[in-house]
Image 1 (tube, helix red, strand yellow):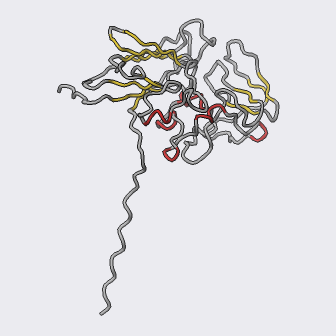
Image 2: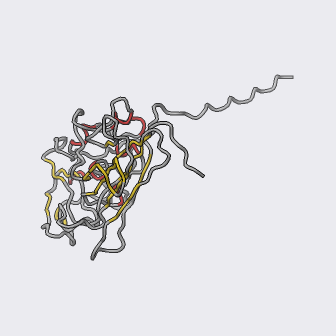
Image 3: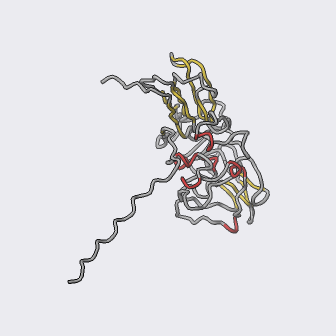
Length: 289
């Protein structure tokens, strides 16, 4: 059947652009399993050019702008180290966006809910505020809140030995060191930030809180592992269909067991909770004889 024409503009979001294990950072050659995403036909007449993400908000009238962080907020979530974003004409299309992944990532980074990549959703599962993105955690190696064998990897104190780091020497963190992040496989490039003190302000050092509403698999993980790696686009009124091209680069000499994940969703955000109806009252007891 013919595609239905949508009588209004609508948004789609595409998530978790990253690469497989890299030999160098930035890579001198195409990153192993590097992701590249392209879609065309955007509504470039919008004030935001038809696309948005952390660091580049859409119109303030759009609800989603309230849960993204740019330089108008207490802290900006800078995506430039994670995604190279180009606009123009690509693959024979016009009004396109092309996103190329820059940063090594792991499958555990993948969001499962829109609230996991946004700030300030509060009761809807929000992970914190924009300011929290740059706030060092309050735990240390000697007060390690993680348990080995759980959903969140143990933080490592002492030498960190990555056999497949390309050139990095082992790093030793003394007892009491405050770290944002932890060694994770199959990574080759370290992504652990050493903080000067608990609660200090350091770009990208914030972690998901260990509170109700935040999935256990994300609690105490750095926001930067998940939040800065998505883009949303606006297709114009009258769009009947759209297409995307998702490319994964080669993996020469790499472990064939690794791959990439591709996620997408719309941007509908609830403005109130819908509660189940109250239970029916018990039946009225029969009248006494």
